Image 1 (tube, helix red, strand yellow):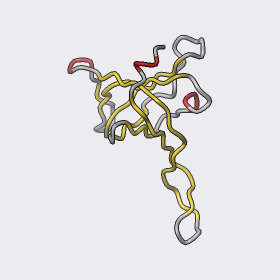
Image 2 (cartoon, rainbow, N blue to C red):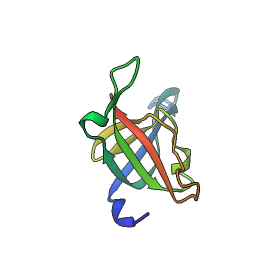
Image 3 (cartoon, rainbow, N blue to C red):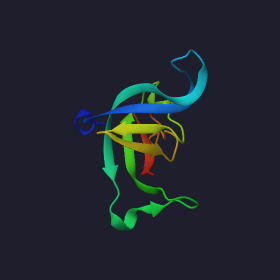
Image 4 (cartoon, one colour):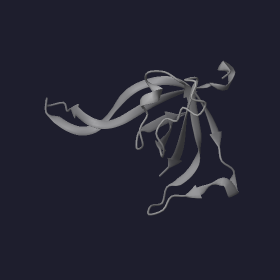
Length: 108
């Protein structure tokens, strides 16, 4: 993977227990980490509507394979350029060489 293709900074968020201002524990979004990424958008006919809801598969986000990116799960939120994308697939190590991670994403 060429570093030039990883031209956007992504924040990865996951739903879990967080501490509220009063010191209690509630379910909420917390940032897992940040990583450089690339984004490939799908064109008109390639977009697929998810069954059972209104989200639309709009593209893929790819990262270098790291201890952070290999843990991306379905439902995680990946924020790129201020847009929140929902992971529709876990992080996939396509080459099986631990070089890159690809995640299918949608916008709700």
